Image 1 (cartoon, rainbow, N blue to C red):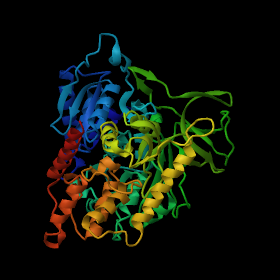
Image 2 (spheres, one colour):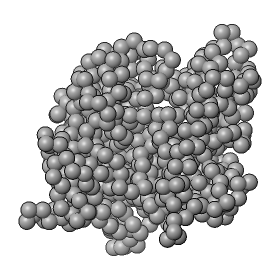
Image 3 (cartoon, rainbow, N blue to C red):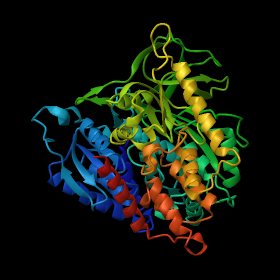
Image 4 (cartoon, rainbow, N blue to C red):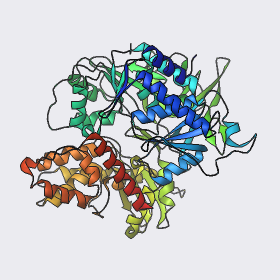
Length: 608
């Protein structure tokens, strides 16, 4: 089996004169991708970077990032993707945990920097541990210890998936994939590389296409045929006030990361009448997806199953004693793959996440997913929830214990409980705190420095003392119900007739609380950034849509990054009301990207 970089190089040679990557600012042929990546590899080698070294690739979705990833692999090194929108503390934690020797800043002309103290001792240290031909990348998931967990991905596992997806769905030069996945997660690799190893064109939307309407316009105008996304993003696309015309070019939608509901699929198939919906499932530890389901027309009611295993993968549903469950009986899903990840990177050594099973006299190494599921008589696997405190929000896998650990680390907090009740489009994190309510602003700043936006609590509920069970343990059921009712009641208050408020500020506050307030009864700090109160890359699209609908205006989504705080948005809307027809034209894509990066950088600087 060929490694992922070899598959990509073969595509560059086979489709040399075909367009590989297209964005508003550039168009790159496969031959150019290969030559630029080789230049990057030469630059890395000249700085002593090679086999066993980890290189952090910093940036956003772009041809520059793809070139850097390919170049790191050509140099024989290991890729670590790091989204430059992450808080500085979290980025540094990731780079430290992954023992990165160098970084490539893709927003600054592929600037290469060696990290201080990254020189390994001869014959020891991380470079010796990671010197393995099959180590392809380091990806991160949320960690129950309070730190992100570094997982070492497999070249063979990655290439196996890429070849399977390309072949199973007939992906080729006739396809145009929309590139929608952010960095820092392993699913970026299938989003970017499945099209490229197949000779398809990867189309990158720009700042004008960040909102739901703009993105649908992009899919239509670029004649996109396929893309990957999470269900919560799909819900946002379909939530706009206006009914969009069907988009006939799309033939494949790969959903993953969250439960996929039949009601969403029904509406999806109306919008994309020629589209095959595919539901993918598999944790990072097993290397991308290990299950797939071609959703029929019409779909089954409720949550869609995840179907059958990919070739070279086997899943077992086991009871608490480790015994296989009969069809229709719920148990924990264990996945055994031929080429899973290599394990967690902990203090410079590899720690296996796999357990040994003995099934029908056979010894099997499998990953205990923590997901509850059951097999039907037809051999199709259904997911029925979690056995622990892990949740998915906007496709991000989050250990609630990590959020709780970060909350409890603040000196104003004596004790805390964290849960994730359902909200409008996805789950929302609520922290129930025993501590000083007057220190909430400092607590939010503390969390913003350490957690990505999807992990930030949307609301903090303060109690004099957390309720306890007779045995002295925290009453999790009672606290979960308190959080659920609070979110539910706040939703009813913001949605009821007459709750719109008389002033523009009251109307805007209602929208903020409705979209990202997580049940908060008021906006405590009007200088707060939208992401500071739990907004995400998904819900900012909803915020944009609802502001435009409420105030009867039109403006590009990037303006919400330029005017990131509540007060700044209020002032912006006031100025917008004085513009002809309440419309603000867009800016060039490069300017929009620069603005977004500048705003996020300024936010990080403010928090330091």
